Amino acid sequence: MELIFHKSEKYIEEDIFYYISDQRDKHSMIKPKKENLICMTVDSKIFTAPNKKEISNAFYPFKKNSIDKIYIGLSFPLFSNNWAASYLRHLLKVIKKDGAIILPVYPEEQADEKGMWSRSFLENIFTSRTGWTGTNNVWAENDGVMSMRIGKNFPNKMNSTFNFFIEEIGNKYLRNQIDNKVINEDEIIHKIWSTSRYSAIVEKIIRDNCNNKNTVFCDIGDNPSLSFEINVSKYIKLKETLAFTDDDELFNDLNNYFMYRDIISNKKYNMNDIKELARIKPNIISIIYNEDNIAKLNDLIKISPSSIFIVRGNLNTNDNTYKKYNIVNYSSIVATKLNTEKVINHYSDIIESEINNEFNSNQKKLYLLTPK
Image (cartoon, rainbow, N blue to C red; front, side, top):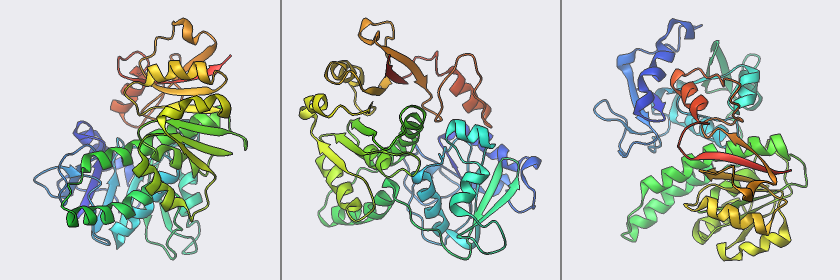
């Protein structure tokens, strides 16, 4: 069985063409036959085993050692962070012993610009540079494509909220079955997937603007997963993280999961404790998951004016409220700062167009506000 993962149905044809093109097969081992591929998407509402009749969700709980090949579509963004590394490690358990995971990689400069995988980034974690001596085999198939296969030693587990979700969801599902409760798959998938994307973008912003050991990061929102994913990042240096959230259950579950792992302090506050920020004065605050992000930003500017803010929404940048801040946009698709004078390249024509039209679109955007 050969699977290919997509962001949504919109990208299926382009994702498949990337791999069936004659440019992507150095060893004649990865080029699929289009008719053999089974498509799965992140936004599918169908939670069934992969099949040709319907497009089911890519986060379906696969059996171990059950899939021959898994192709990661261009539209299925895997950033070079703990979350994606943990996800790839998980997929290595899903493929058969002689199976493979095939994924796009980018030139070093592009990868660093977008927070995506390059060959060296991938080999640093899953390397098998010579023979069979690494933690895992990574094969360079051709420009823009690499494959991962089962090597001599299985790669070490990394700290990530992905591991929490993948390990605990099964237990929670069983408990809910016993207690006759209904599990909301859509809500769980949304939290898993959005944490992957926004954590990578926030990591890149921290690296670009305030990456030092004394940095205090704070997230204001309905999804406490973000503060934990930022906390365990290998790519940034933080003093501590804070989560202002009313989701006590998920925060406590995550806190218990990470209690015996090597993480820095992650403190929880309820949303009605927001004035505590005047005392704490975090270096950087993200406001991403709420419906009223802009209203929260306006309140927080009064409480903690010296903080850097990351906010998702539609911001009137000409408002006098923000006159003491330099404001730039970051892409919500890849982890890079948008520049109207520079084209952001991507292997996908569709996604490249989406990225370069973000600045002028009416969709919610990611803003970075830095005190002048």
